Amino acid sequence: LTWYPDQVTEKESVTQVIDDLVRQISEKDGHIEQAKDAADMNKSEFQDKKKHLVEKVNTEKDKLESLKNHYDAEKKHLLTCSENILHEVQDLALREDDLLAQHEVITEEKNAE
Image (cartoon, rainbow, N blue to C red; front, side):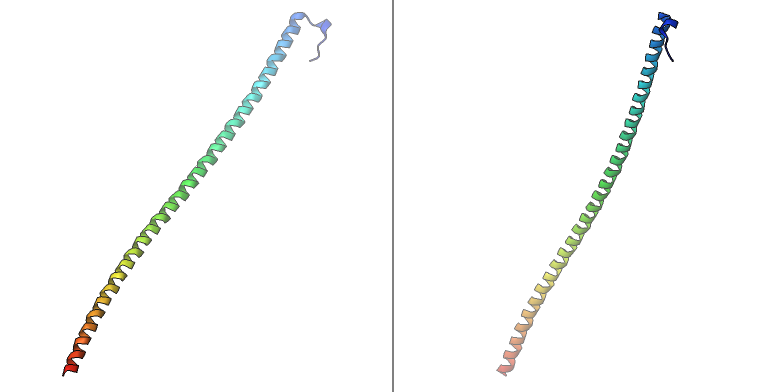
């Protein structure tokens, strides 16, 4: 619109200025809405990424917990095996002592004859 002051009444020019201001305000509101929409999208995207990362961290924590439990079970099994081997070695040592003692008795009896 081109404004020619001599052709427009004061009421029309005020109306025109008001209409122009209303239009500018509407445009600003539109820009604000666009910015809010973009911010909401960014927030939603951020929340999705955060949720994904939290799920990933929890999955890794579960894997580590599972590995720890497996390690603990293996450790317990190995300790049990070690204890069993130790008992067997002790039993064998006692049997060896018994056999040596029997051998000495037999040897002494043979020498006595």
